Image: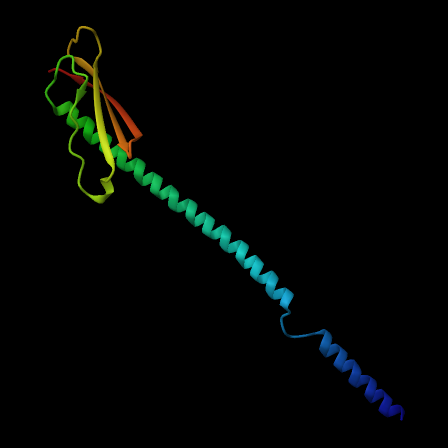
Length: 141
């Protein structure tokens, strides 16, 4: 009888150990793992969105700067006009990268009366928002 009781006790001990050391994953562990995955995913997507916006803004600024430089060269190549307040802008390229861009070129004489030197300002706009202004000087040669 003692032997049977020992066997029975060992059997229940084995069952208790088996129940306590489950090999499976509980519902709570699964919920916690999904919550951690969600937080990491949101952080990653937020960073991706920020990087995408930064690339867009950098591209917009680089395009505006390039247009401003080409417009300034255009204005300097035009014949000098005494007492001019503006010069006509060069045509903006047709590509989709240049949609919604426009240029305004203003001029003012450095001295009154105009002695052949003008301060020229090129302003590049996108959707009527000024992005870049570039100043230079035009001389009557």
